[in-house]
Image (cartoon, rainbow, N blue to C red; front, side, top):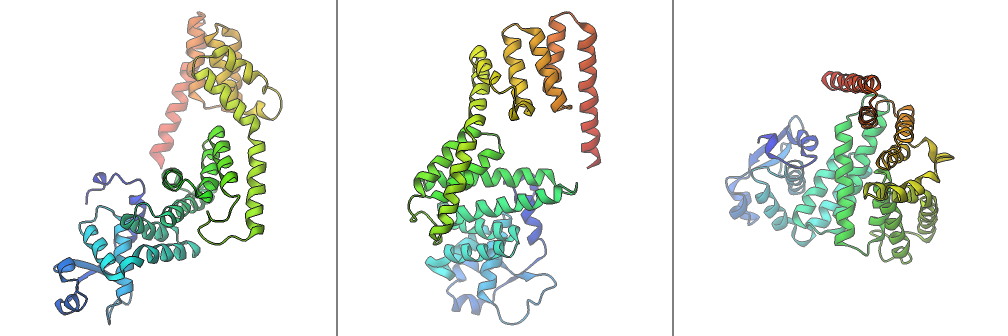
Length: 353
């Protein structure tokens, strides 16, 4: 299959896990005995990984799990629909529960890619499965957090981190839409929004968690009272901590919406103290000042951005425009040159990867 044909976000990281899978056609006698001839006649099935001991009697469970891995690793695999039909035929109404259980086990063992493949197969059988959605989102979260830990040593794959993070966040969002009464979906989604700097969304999402977690019926597994109380205390503290970041976000939103004076007034309250080192605060203040015709103040704000984020080309572009507007060709040329240097360095870094 041409990789470009597969628009799935993380398949390219999962499909290598099935490249060494061995395939064989099941005997007509076996297909007859299992009433599967209509589904699998002439269809090769995954019997094991090349180099492993795949000889001897056919193990139905292993074949089912290998089919699930193929389906989850490459959703566009030629026989994926046939495999799905066989899994439902062979396992029956417990098929999704079985794949969810095996996926959870793989995650517990630290094999998050295997967990993702098995849980994606479960979602192919039942796209609305609460357990499969929840555990799949968590497996993706664990996968990118594990990669991020490696990235701290300069060895991690930033693209992989970003794609698994997006997959996790989107799945948690889907979980809360399909199962709006499930508290733990909101718990993790709140952290996803926090990591994206969406403080208002995080606060609202965690408020939903606190409302729903007042009872224990929303949990996948039984959660003891002490753990539930601990989670509620944790999130209550998070909600309180978000009061000021939410105000800053609202101020930035006001500026992006055209209320430059109102947004500026909101953000000016945070120019001293712990948020004074947050470069977006100064960037949006610069945008507001420039839009209000206060060129000198805007220039000072964008320069403050560059002290906190030295390679910020957006701030440099704003400075170019401001200096051009005020007739300062020398400084406009200076920041155009800086933009060229930053972009050139980025291209070299990307070319070296």
